[in-house]
Every structure is written in C-alpha cells, then in structure tokens.
Length: 388
Image (cartoon, rainbow, N blue to C red; front, side, top):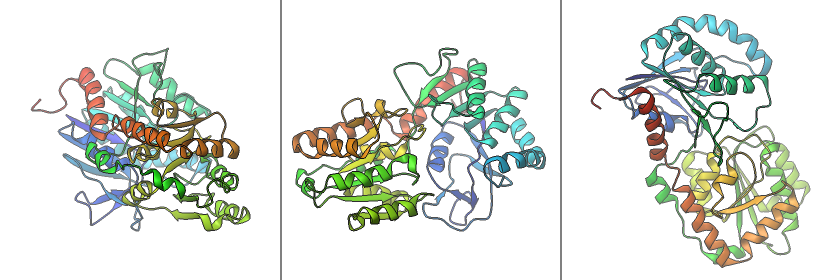
C-alpha cells in the first residue's frame, strides 16, 4: 500500500540525510515509524532552502520519498490570504500525489493538511486524519471545522484519531473517533532515559522546563515561585530549555526577581541535549495554561524519572493518574512552590513518584504508537503491505 502524507511541516534539503531532506521536532521520528507499516510512503510537504538548525533531523523511512511544495510564507491572516494562490500554484502536485496514493494521512491542525484532507475526500481516497491539537477545546472557527469534519467522516474507510486521552471517547456524536497519544521515544530510549533518583540531590535540587517559551506555558510562574522557595531550598536551580517570543522577557523577569544567578536559559537545543538536561534535573515544572495536545516534553521528563508539576490541561491528568507528579488546581507561583515543597521535602515520597513516572512513560513508546495506529488502519483498510 502506498501512503501519502500531507503536512505543513517545513522541510529543507540536507546533504546529510539519506532522503536528501531534513526537518526538526518529532515529525521525522513519527514519519519514520509510520512508514514501517506501508510498502511506500510519500511526504508531501513545503520545502525551502534553510540553513542547518539546532535539532535538525534527517527524514528517513521504509520506502520514503519527499515531494516538495512551495513554502506558504506568512502568519495569521496574511498566510490565509496567500493560501488560495498557493493552492493554485501547487494544485498539479497535490492532485497527482493524491491520485497516486492508495490512502492519505493528514496531521491537523494545519493548512496543507486541510487541503490534502479535502482533496482526498473528494477523490474518495481512504483517509487517516490525526488531530494533534487540544481536542477538548476548540476556540477558533478552523478548530470547530476540523472537529466537525472528523465527526462527519469518521468510520468505514476513514480512520480519525484525536491526540490526547480521557476516560470518555473523544466524541459522543461519532464514536468511531478514537484517542491516540503522541511520543518521540522508542522503547530502548525509554529504558536508557530512566535514571535512578538519588535523594541526596534534593538538598541542591534542579527544576527544569522544556517547551516553546511563551507566557501560557508557565515559565514565568516557575520563575516567580523560586523567590518563595529560597528559605527551604537556597541552592535551588532552574533550567529553562527552548526558545520563543517571550524568552527575552523571562530573562528580564529573572533579573528583576534577583534570581538570575539561579536560572540557566539554554535556548533551543537538540533532542539529545534535552534528554541530558532532564537527566540532570530533579523535577519537571510545567504550569501550562495553553491549549495542549499531548506535550511530548512531559513524557520525556517522566521517562527520565522526573516527577512532574503541571496543570489539569488536556491529557496531563491522564499521564499523571498513577501518581507520577502533582496536578495543580491553579497555575500560580504559590501553587507551584507548594507542589515543589511537596515533592522535594520527603525523599521516600519523591522516589515513589519518580518510579511511577517511569512506569507511566513506558506505556507510550513509538513502537506502541505505531502498532496502535496500525491496528486501526488494518481494521479499516486490510493488509498495509503487499507481503502481509
């Protein structure tokens, strides 16, 4: 079976990649794993000349090839206005690849995925739609459209999965929609990540956050909580991993609070360095109020044995339901400080939370992600490989 994947993920030429292309984030890992299910996989993605970036990863996979689209530049309403012209310019490629495919996969939200989804539906191709935003909250017209379309078409040859997880099905209107998790770690990597936590480190603890540095992710809340923890933990340190529009403001806030010497801003680092920093830390603090889908950094932290302090957003309560951390009722400095005290003040409790975090993470490997998706697709489409 030939699968075509339509995604807005920007890729670029790379001489270091076997396919000739690379990108960053978890996308290349998931596409490599997904391609193992099929005879051939075609990624139909925007491609632009791009200098090598921190975290660049090659695009590789079983029978994988990349078909380039032009890059739909711009943001917000400017990008939306340009998408009509972009669609006309790329229509021959979009049409050709959709017709050539036996089935089409689209990760959404995303404009390129949306166009691929509608084109596949019009041509009667079996669809695999994976909603990667916060399924439990649709604030925009586009988000309501994506959910409505999935509820309309799920079932039969159309497999629709929503990233996240609760005790209830994603949709009562169409129970053919199922939950799926997100991950970037293989079973072997989870085994290698697991770190036995030494209670002695709790006298000089390190907090860490790894995410895009925006105000809704909660880095500023953790910074303000440090001032409340100085008496109990005078050696407390905070590692901030990732870049983003609010990074410079967070640096200024640390200076104003008088804690700049206890905070290290690492900026964007590659995946191996993220794991290294997580292994060196004692607690992952993520008091997010953003609309999360399935934040992979939380899963990576738990795989490293870090108890997690976070909020009751999206799938996070599900990830921590075995006691691998603390769920905040509100994202405030006082609440974060209290949760940090709770985790670090009792070595025995801390070790138990750490062990439970690893146990929870072991349920979310890339292999399990692939096999779960593969089961749904085979039920709908039959054999995915010619020798099956």
